[in-house]
Length: 225
Image (cartoon, rainbow, N blue to C red; front, top):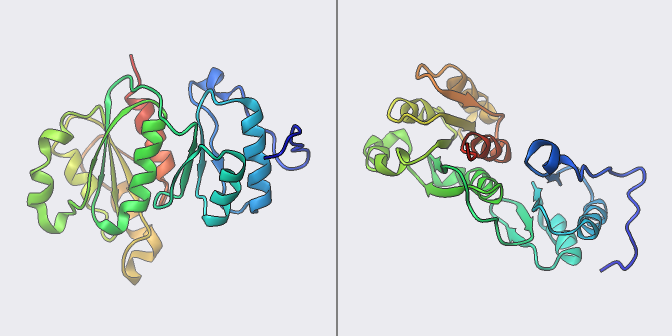
């Protein structure tokens, strides 16, 4: 661990007041940054202190090693490519966020959404592999879906699942298109357009593979009144 206060001049300016201003802390987006840059930011986070939680998103193995060198207690979820410090989420408050994914290939994005909502202080539940190719699967989970204040639905391929879920429950749906699918899915563009054109009301759509944005939006929707 570095012993002196890290110098981020010309590198980053951490928004330490964001939690006080917006109610939610800043996250560190690692993709596109070098491991050394992420290490310097992690050291600055350590100097700031552990309240509130800091999330490091889109972290590859090199980024994760850099963060853990400065914050060895941090939780690392390799599948979600996410690290959290401190490692324990805050006590849940507000309504429940349920995250649903269409298939196993959507799990990394779904877990990013799930962990984001949990670390922003919401009770969470996770429903996996309920794509519309077997409609009975999602119908069998209606009790869990209807217990949510907000539902995140993650799907690639044709992206039909969010519209189906929105037609079955009262809670708002945050739809996440993923880059999963054969060539005509165009790296997530096809499910994105399907979700934007959902005929069921109450569907909001985030960008392709944006599990963090979906989890954050759902946490805000489910915030204590």
